[in-house]
Image (cartoon, rainbow, N blue to C red; front, side):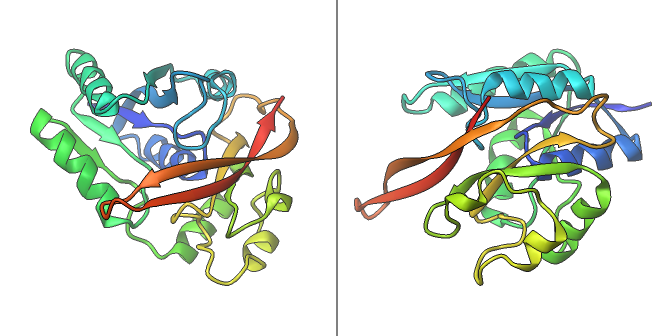
Length: 230
C-alpha cells in the first residue's frame, strides 16, 4: 500500500527530478504539490515564478497544487506551514518530500520543524555529487530553462537559457553545476512528467535587490536577474 505524501514543489529542476524518481519507485502516493508564494505578488518564494505558471505545471502533471501564501511578518512562514502540516496530517499524510541535494543546514532545518509534528522528511535525490545529480537530470528527459540568477555569479544573458550539457560544461568557475548555492534557478516545462508541454515565454530579464540583515547586524544586499514570464 502506497504511503501518502506531499511533494514540496519549486517549479524547478530539482523538485521535478525528485518527483519523477518518486513516481517511478511507486512507494509514495503524492496527494498534492505544495508551493509557497509571496502573498503580495503571488510569485513562488523559491524561484519567483508566477502562480499561473505553477498552476499550469500541476495541471499538466496531474497532481493538485496546494499553494501557501506567505507575507513578510515575523514567523508567518512557520505559522502557515504548520497550518499546512495539520491540514495534511488530517488526511493521513506522514511524509513531506523535498528536492534538496546536499546542504545539511537546509535538511536539518526541515527535520527540526517537521519531525516534532510527526512528519518524516524524505529526500529522494540527496547525497550525490553535483556532477552526478546534473547528469541524472540531463538523462531524465525533463526540460528546464534558467529563470533566476544571482547577479554577481551569472549575468542577465543566462536568463532563458536551456539546461544542456553544453551550458553546464561552460558555467563560470565557482558556480555549482546544480545551482545549489543559489547561483541559478530553473522552470521545468516538458518531459515525461507532463501530459503536455507548458506554454510560456520569457519577455525580458529584470534586476531585483534584497537587503538581508545578518546575525552581526550588518545589512548585505543581494541582487538577482529574474525572468519576466508571459
